[in-house]
Amino acid sequence: MHLVLVSSLVPVDNPASGFDIANRAVLDGLLALGHRVSVVGFLQPRHRPAPGCEMHLLGELEVTNAKVGRLQKLNWLAAAFLNRTSVSSAKMLGVSAGRVQSILDGLAPFDGVVLNSVQLPAAFAQIFRPYPSIYVAHNVEADSALENAERAKGAIERFLFRREASYLERYEQQLAQNAVALWTFAEADRLGFGRSVSDRAFVLPLVTGWDAPVLPQTERQHDLGLIGTWSWRPNRLGLDWFLDQVVPHLPKDMSIAIAGQLDGTPVVSHPGIRFVGRVPDARAFVTASAVVPLVSRGGTGVQLKSIETFELGMPSVAAHASLRGIETIPENCAPTDDSREFARLLVEKVGRARAGLSQRLDGAVFHQAQKARMMQVMHDVLPRLAANGASTEERLQVQPRLKIHGGGRS
Image (cartoon, rainbow, N blue to C red):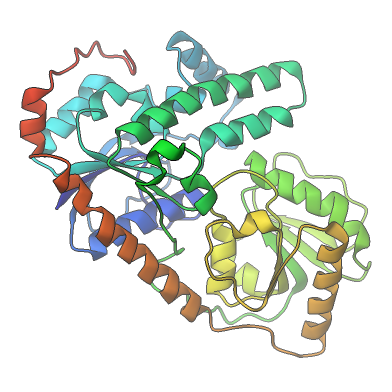
């Protein structure tokens, strides 16, 4: 099959963020099944596109709020209001609808489009609608926005998140209703778009890399190691819960290293906490820990840091939200949402590590099982694109083209 993968950010050669890792897993799975894949989307600055496929770049674009200035954020907000769209889709409107349509015309014939997350497909919905599609929902974005609104610091922030949620709910429903199938990364998300589409929604297990990770040769440098993009609000909620509710129950001699991007360093009193910022090798940082706390407390979708922890065979204590989308939990992971029990389990596992008792498992077993299930889901679902109708050209002949005026939405 010839598939067009449409993504706000294209898969990259060396993925680091959760979004990039999921993008690359979807692309690698499609290529491993022998399909021709053409990719359309933006490239994040200082990244290289993933090899093995045809890239049709719309330009370079930085979409992470924490990496841009106040003026850029205001420009995105203004574009969202002027175009009556979400802020996440307004970020995509630096390219014209005519350019996107021209790329698709040049790629035809193809069997269908794989619409990766909501941002770019919603920005140019009128262009992608005629084609048979699979919608890849990384999260139920509207639910995440509503969750952010509930935890907003003020009335303006609450209004903006509710506005975002309203648009996202509409776009996600449209993409789900129009798709021949949906791929989600967690069972809860499979049911998150309504019962009318749940019978064609499938959970897609993920891996953080196509090959099982090679364990770095590292010595233990800290008792607990946490790593994540803490500037993303759902992740920050989990970190704040850990610092506020769990850390007070930990002994003062426990060393706790926290790596990753932060918007403002939290004030903490525990003497063992170090904020180390971005680290050159995330896996080396994780494997230098005795135990990994998995602290997600909100959001939707799968937690890829949890998957990576299990692929590395590391012992962990996990909040239940950190285990979304993971069918088989390794034996060395202890789940709990109670902060005191979370702390007790951490102390117990760290004590074993200090006593020289190994708690690691062979993470390759977990990795292989995840990859096998992912490939099976893709293999079973992709034929629905071809079964949905005739060729792309025949579909377009019977469905009139929308007039394109150069903007993002019409």
